[in-house]
Image (cartoon, rainbow, N blue to C red):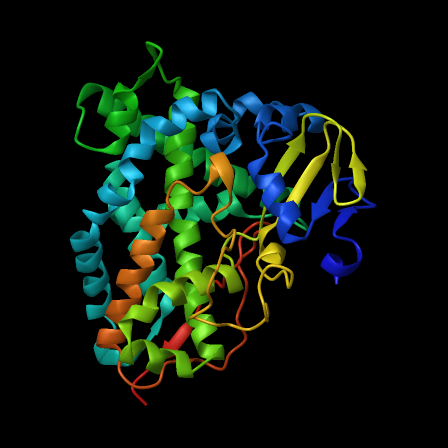
Amino acid sequence: MMRATQPVFQHPDWGGWQVFRYADVSRVLSEHATFSSDARRMAQLEGSQGDADPLGSSILQMDPPRHRQLRNLVSQAFTPRMVAQLEPRITAITNELLDHVTAAGEMDVVRDLAYPLPVTVIAELLGIPAELREDFKRWSDAFVAGDQGLSEEERRALFQEVQSMYGYFTQVLEERRQHPQNDLVSALLAASVDGQRLSTVELLGFCGLLLVAGNETTTNLLGNMILCFDEHPDVVDRLRANRALVPGAIEETLRYYSPVKGMSRITTTETILGDQRIGPDQIIIAWISSANRDEAEFSDADRFDIEREPNRHVAFGRGIHFCLGAPLARLEAKVALNAMLDRLPGRWQVADVPLEMINSFILLGVKKLPMTWGA
């Protein structure tokens, strides 16, 4: 409805702008000179101190040239070629997780596979023990939680969790300074830009971003994929019969139930978006989930079609902030789906219970996803 009637909409209560159409969302995400990601700019607008938050010093909330310099430091670890080398390890982790559930004929997709798989992979890349994944889960959930409708006490508890995460990474950084290893944390410590090492806040921002982005988003991609298949039961049989359709099923899940619903930007200058004139220093929410259902870009946009061609979804963003981990997320999803098709026979069925959505303004996914097979 918003795409048709108010595609660029100023929210009457908080004044921010919301953008719904594919073309406009793509422009907001990719035109970084006009639509800034700089957290300090946002913090000043909200009257808070952005410097105190390490995530504000991460590449997610940074503009060029600093963004390019810092992103280049880690981009080598996430190229398709480097990521492809992880496939045997991802396969081993996936099969180990499925070993625990295959005999039972049922599992919670989130608890038993979709969460532990990506968090174990990113923990091993960073060089931190995957056994702490319960802590990582708590920290990550707090990190992405929306604070709408929360009491002061609940807000404080979320803040404490995030501080615990930074406290933990501060220790890890200290250990790696003394004893470097062959891992991403050590590589970041050794890296320099124009002869300058990264600041502690920048290092913490990187570690936090990689941990949170490396698990929350892929977890929701895997869970959302099972939800799509549950709504379209014929798909699993088609995939079993023809594995060449697996990549298309992953891409269509990314479009249909995008794990990241939206991203925020802030205008650096006056601009026209759609038919609206928007001044400088305005916060803009680009709704990825709406863009990915835009009828002007996708024919029969509300239909889940694993053979959709072309499928130019914006689930991973656009432009200089295009998701660094996209090759890794795609590989994890491919390995997990193929292993499930190999090892979970018969009809896959999500239990007929109410599903609870995760508490997040920007992420789409469920907290628990009980599923059975074999019938």
